[in-house]
Image (cartoon, rainbow, N blue to C red):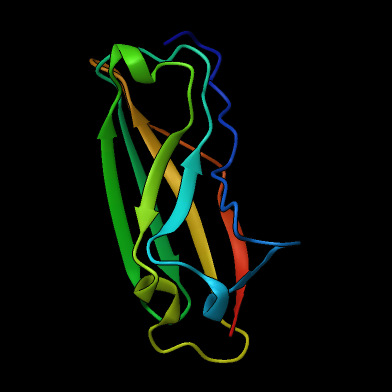
Length: 117
């Protein structure tokens, strides 16, 4: 990696609308996308993490292949991650980490959404 830090786009929750995820309307699993990023290389490990304000967590991992370069990495997040213990004012934060061979991991900016029934 060069002295200039790579800037990643935040993850995407296609089912979220204006920063809100309506949990009762979700299909299981819930789609979470990591957008394509600059300098992606075969063998990069992409790890998506979800943490909710109600203490639920989910983690998924994918290793890039030649056929996945330049495409979003799509994860299937368990709906229960958002639904379990849902209370008024709950939120979820998603971020991902990219690990290139022989370099330090790079963490994306977070995506925070409010959770509503």
